[in-house]
Image 1 (cartoon, rainbow, N blue to C red):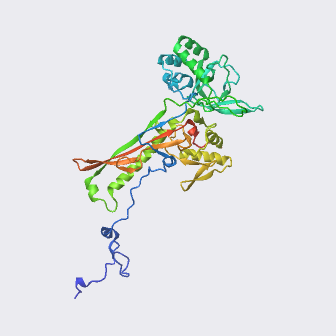
Image 2 (cartoon, rainbow, N blue to C red; image 1 turned 180 degrees about the vertical axis):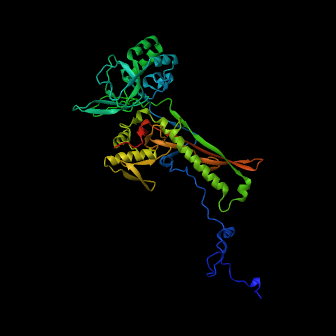
Image 3 (cartoon, rainbow, N blue to C red; image 1 turned 60 degrees about the horizontal axis):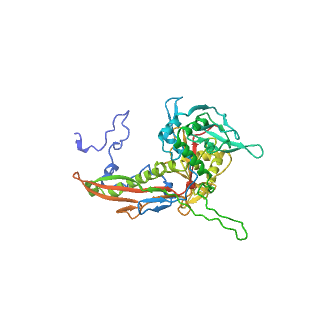
Length: 485
């Protein structure tokens, strides 16, 4: 009689060549609680929501911030007699049809404030394009000025003979710059320096006799040029401000000169700009899903981070007050060879006193370090905010990804002197605003709509002011790509 089925205790050995020993449990059968089921009785440890776009935002930290209670900041200055140099703009309708935009001719010191657009159009139409090759000398020091030049593109070097016969480099000229206005008000004007093209380029040329012909036919232009020439003859200090007469080194009782410090009658005013957004949160999310992290707080935290990122971008790129568009053109220099060399950085540093920081795109900093490596130089470090950061000549070099990189792989390096007491660059904001969340930033409840959506208005108010022109400078045309050794 066979044993009953339920008495069988051995497992089916399965297919095989022989009986062999008894096999163990099947692989898909567990002998303990699995992790998938166990997770039903536990929870996970979560991180706060992460955001890749958060940067170091060194500019916001490096700027001293001035509390602007009235919403507007006026920069009062001494009367400036020497007019700053701007840059003209061009329009191109083909390789051989390049024209200067007439309205931008008023960026030139000699035409600053000239109102007659018809005369400007005629003047712009008399310029003729001329291509130049690398190494070509446009004019030499001591030659008579017979033409005036507008640089469309290319890099040109100003040079002269040194004391001992060597060539002395005085600077570079790039797109938008002008050469020849020193002839105004002179009977026999001469070039003070020589100019050579370092790269192939294009210039717009205007014969000087055309200016004389147009001046004879346009009384308003003649009067404007005469005022400009007279203004250039007025005594100024080394920065172009109206001079205060003083006397030094005298003996006895001479009559001392007298005068006063005149002010600019049309000072620039900076109104606070703003960045805004509306944060929306559903009431169900705000009510129920707040453990272990408050949903509204996390939404607000990431929104504020995005606003601060945009704030720094505006401080660099905004056309009204951003650094790249508001640094005086007299405080802009171009790299001599393309990559940012220690020589270029030294020249930028020498243009102002008490430079506090350099700001550059991280790739521009890397390009500068490559040039240091080639020369066997080791840049130092500086302590800033309790951190050691790279420095050049003791001035911190701070990364700022908001400085753009052009399609030609060039960027800019900005040098700043900061602080009101040092006549530098300052950030502007207003504190104590209603429902303030951070200094200069508030979060205002806007209500709950019919779809049960809670809305919050998040606003940051800010601006930036350059107190005097030499408080900021820019090294332009910084080549950031690698070059062959």
